[in-house]
Length: 195
Ligand code: AMP
Image 1 (cartoon, rainbow, N blue to C red):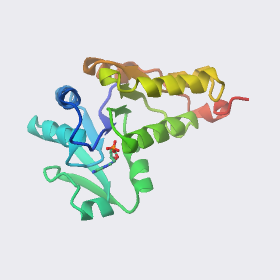
Image 2 (image 1 turned 60 degrees about the horizontal axis):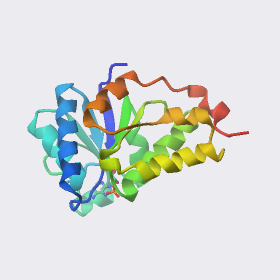
Image 3 (image 1 turned 30 degrees about the vertical axis):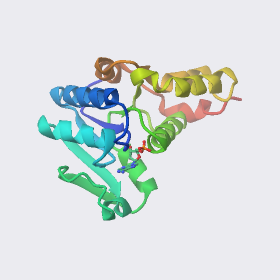
Image 4 (image 1 turned 120 degrees about the vertical axis):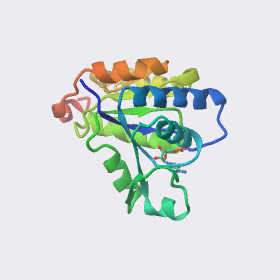
């Protein structure tokens, strides 16, 4: 499928290893090159800051979606011109998922994990049907991969649910996996519960 616009979840922390910044920069450049627009949390720090800086420097399109209370404490990236401010975190998360062709999670903390797991849960219920790609830089997400697979092996979810996400080790695998992901079933609600 042709990918025009994606949402990216990623860290706000500025203290993470340089590898994470380098990989974020590399992905941002590839997305701009492929003319893929980006929606993100609008933050100025950490991997969010690196993502937005790189996209803007390279002439790409990026939009921030942030609750007003974060903008009030000046968390909004100053160079991002396309911004939407929401009343709540919940509203922000639902706006992230509208009109996108896919979702990419880079390494992050509780915010990233929360957003990612909500998207996976909505996909399981057939409320979100787009590809979810998890960039496993440095094996950062191995424990999550193991946890999700344990959910399946212990029958908290079914084998079919393994198709909801794709872990990739390398930046260059992100776009091809977005493009080639199997279409997800809108009727997923029918097999959401392992009965
Ligand atoms: P974390 O991974 O805990 O650093 O949280 C990052 C994710 O949560 C991002 O994808 C944002 O949507 C949201 N978030 C957390 N902190 C910030 C921040 N300082 N500015 C903007 N968004 C943030």
